[in-house]
Length: 531
Image 1 (tube, rainbow, N blue to C red):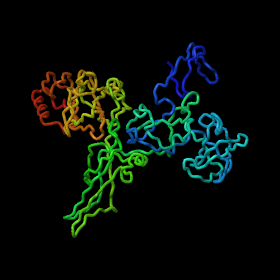
Image 2: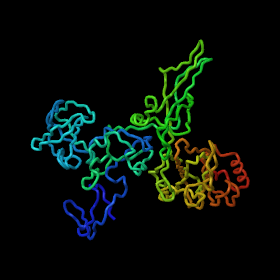
Image 3: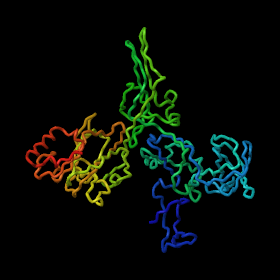
Image 4: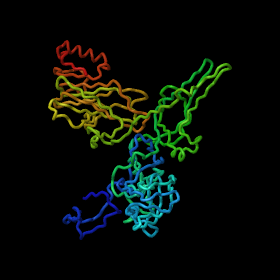
């Protein structure tokens, strides 16, 4: 099987007589008895008309979102104007008209299999259908395309063919609707990126298929994207004064949003609900402030198409009135829980084990803990709130005296299924509202180590119900029979090393157990190292 990139066209036709070849410079090198039998696009994102947008916390996870893209710059080589281009000019002269004779892989013109050309000078887009190679002139068909500003351009200004990797930027710098994407392309969204398919119009098949000519990162500093502001908590700051016998009551009207890995319906009117001023208000579902294009397209039933309304009702008395000081601070702070579900199977998907590139948006990693004496077992204890829509896994990384023996990946704790899944030692049910349950994670029979790092990855499908963790402790021990036992109970071997993280949250019962062991001379104070 042969994998090829930057392919122009739709397919390779079967050929059983002519061997495939590649070029080394200008020399064709045949690949022996290698013939084309069939060809297929390996994934839909490689179909040639897909571009991926990286936009931190974009908030556009439902397929009925629209996005406005503008300011993406051409990837073509610029050519200088030879003469001034006035506001009333009907043609322009450049130093070399060569690259402007074709557009989107076709010759420029009005005939069959020809294309209308577009160029960019300054910030103005110009349409053309004719050119003169000998005079290096381009005949203008229309100016101020896509509402760009018509203006005079001086000689020496740079002119670009308005293409991005062989595709007209008019197909990119525009309003896009995600509902026109395929389901597979829409499913490739992450919390910080999404994919779009540009419209090929009539060039959808055969040798006439329009595709990007290569793969690269593009955009430029002036590229602007619309986005939704997604949130799960709101903190409204208002300088208010309410004398006795007066009152101030506030409420908000919001619209729904879809979590990064969720299935909630976006753009639903939630209606009004109470709002506490100058305090953090946690919401029971994910909400958004929609972009202007989404408000226009999806919220026509709301007043002024607004996705967030704050209502403050002031009740006065005969002699006094409450007051809002708008000359002082008055703002609204929004907070989003970055929760997603990027890994379906932790046993087969090793991205979480790597030192970098973890796909989770919610990750906690401790600092390196150095032991005074080597250990052979490791236990993590914590209390957590975990909704049925959420999950978390625990991993560890070990260090040894010989720096060459540093583990280059994280290891998942074995778990109750003993599959190195990162699950706890025993099954723990999901939490009820704000209920914290105890979890233990144990790794036994480890080769001696003298340092470790703990990593916790958190995931879920409902951003309003994130994982919450408290009373986190990690204990390094020098014996291996800890699984299924209580900490420091039933020990049959002397403790060589015991390291406790976050000693301020160790309960007194454990401290008493340590003291009993010291009295029995099973451990000494020198053997206890608290980090």
